[in-house]
View 1 (tube, helix red, strand yellow):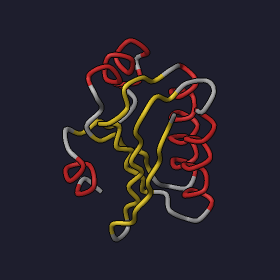
View 2: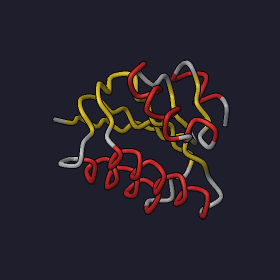
View 3: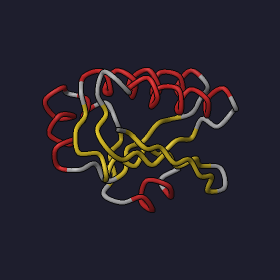
View 4: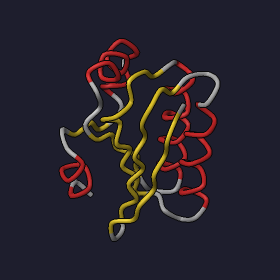
Amino acid sequence: MIEINVTDHQQVTLVEVSGRVDSMNANELGQAISQQINGGRVHLVLDLSNVEYMSSAGLREIVVGLKGTKRASGDLRIAQPSDRVMEVLEMSGLDSILNIYESQSAAITSY
């Protein structure tokens, strides 16, 4: 079960994700991200503080979103990933590619 909440903060779009992101629902995350990019909102912050599990399918959607924002001269930044998600980001090496912030406000104001 995944829940996604999207809100705008001036020029930055906050995408809050909660639940388990796995192969059954990772496409929902991908769709939420691509809808923002297609709508011209390319300064994204992905809040992963309430994600208890992230599979490789979820990581793939984040990478696809990152590439999409970069193509549109934007960026996708991560805010306060849960310990388990941070572990997965580190194991996959994505922690060196993604900008990761300790709080939502730090990620939003980084733009």
